[in-house]
Image 1 (cartoon, one colour):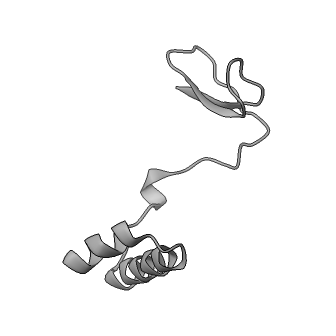
Image 2 (tube, helix red, strand yellow; image 1 turned 90 degrees about the vertical axis):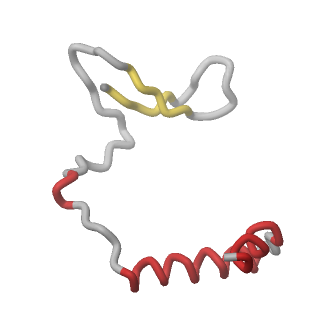
Length: 75
């Protein structure tokens, strides 16, 4: 599958991520940042998950997202 950013799509206001399946040849656009090797990905450990959860809660408090805070308190 070939993917790229369509900078000026018709009928849309801004850039749009476009996927083109079954193309014989792919291409890279100016926003390409490199290939992701799935073998290099690793699971998050508990310390990393805790840091992400704390950041999520801090963000919810900063924007006063009471719905999310209520859900988190119920857990």
